[in-house]
Image (tube, rainbow over all chains, first blue to last red):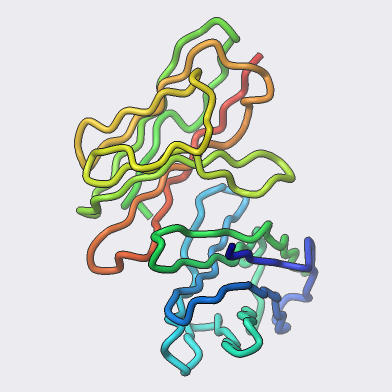
Length: 113
Length: 113
């Protein structure tokens, strides 16, 4: 069965600094998608970034980028120039052709002014 | 983000009440989901609807009753709930063109007294 592991329940970063959130997953599939979702205190789960496993190039969205290591089954999220509005719970998620999405337990990110 | 809306945003109910949660998506998607998010627990998938048919029910107690009258609307009918049902209930949808990506609503915070 596929699993998604986020080993850091909480992290803190100074405003304007860079932080990396870790995510590992387990699968025997070769074709799948990976996501990072952000859930701020306002509660709405917002898609941050999406990666297709067959694409070797790491996805980027403005200050957010991923380091996708398919062989290592690792999918970390890097946030550059951290801003106060980045404070949220971040969920890593996995999806494959079984049409199921599996979420990690989340990492709570604090931004220190 | 207004693609998926949920009402009400907050709900307080007694254990003998009957209430309904509503979700509406404006994205032209054909699959909709109910999730339960409790404090310090992973996101729990409750129900999946695809083309208005229920395709998954993850052993959810019968006091939760979903309804999907059309591809844009999803309801969760609640009756005789327990205090442990207090949680954030999230609705999500997905469909063309990104068939693998779920988009979430803002959630309904439910408190059962």
